[in-house]
Image (cartoon, rainbow, N blue to C red; front, side):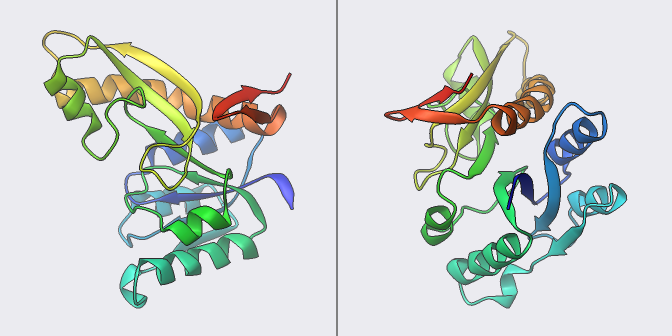
Length: 204
């Protein structure tokens, strides 16, 4: 198994997938995207992956499986068959089952549009605005069985402006996501990391 081989799981527009593939093409992110999986047939991420000649591009339909664990097991089999070391979530809108998380423990990476542990969940940008914070941002983290609760790999901060709405703040956060995610993946495969408790320590 190549330590640089990744599978990307995506549900929507694929903007983070696109910036990862662009960074790979530019020589700035030394990962090898071997597989892209989407649970949505209409996901633009599938088209982006095909255009970039990703070796395997799969639409796996949740309705074909009896429950979430069975669907996740099918995705896991595809990931193992593609010999991927890392699973990178890029706008993947399904909560992963516990068996899947345990199977790939400390190998699943996600990016979240808030400074965790503040504002976990699907409405992070709205929640931050409603709370009245003065800064927000994004977090790249490992996935565990607590929603948005895994160890933190990297974070970036953006200001929250007085006239921000959800769309304007989210756009500013996404601009940072598109820099932070490929940079963190590059650091992950070039340096690696270890743990001090739940703290991630980057190797040097």
